[in-house]
Amino acid sequence: MAKTNDVLPSGRDVPFAEIEATLARLVRDGRRRKRSPARALTATVIVIGGTPRLAAAAEALEQLGESAGVRAILISEGPHTAPIAHVTENAIAIDGLAPRFLNNAVAALRLSSLPAAVWWRGGSIEALDDLARLADRLVLDLEDPDPAWRRAADVFETTALTDLRWTRLTRWRSALAHLFDLPKVRDAGSSFRRLSIAATDRDAARLFAGWLRSRLRWPADFPIDITADDGAAGDAASPLTRVALEGTGLSITLQVRQGRGCLAAAVDGLDASTRIVPLGDGSLASLIGEELGVRTRDLAFEQALAAALEIHQ
Image (cartoon, rainbow, N blue to C red; front, side, top):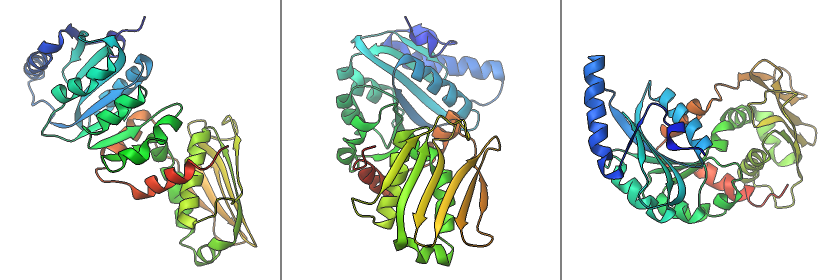
């Protein structure tokens, strides 16, 4: 059975009441060993999810810690009211904590003088609602996002909410938005008749389609076609592989170029209209690092999500 030491292999087991004292001692010991100042902490990141997903998150935050120090609190839900914690210098893993004690544990362990971000990788929806009140930013990162997405409207006024799928779509959104800087594309905005998306992640495709629908003010019956793609034709790390926006006399295509780590954005019928942009670093560390740098609400995401919830494919 997976345990907290699978999440923080180099940590040590301590009772909950001794976490802060142990952290302080580890920091002092680390400072003496390194003979250099300890990294300044800039935020608390609370990660909730199953043990395998917590381990991946812990590794990403450790990579991120090389440039920006964070205190990581990694918690999986379970039946325990007073579980043993596993602790390293700047991270705490708690295995099997009863959901009703989640708020208390986070409130006790977060650094109250610094921003707190919740990275939600799984768990009970009721606990999500409660924990949102303690967070300055809530980042969803779920295999099945629908249950959390449908609670999003209740969270928008409580904390700044986003989804890591939105972050993965940044280059796609940027590439398409830049094409709309072209006067002929901008003027043709109302002439588009169909959107087709090939995707390795159907929920990301819904979010992208929701963004376009909300930006271009398409009616509810606008034709949107989403098809599954295993990524063999493009970059498997990208949530989308191809987007086609078909209009009267003008069409737009965005497509991953196989093996090149870049995205080609083209407008059919216009000279010099193809643009090549890098897909960028799609690693978990890079994505969460980008989100931790944001502090404000993202109204474009909120509107895109509301529209995505109305797309059933």
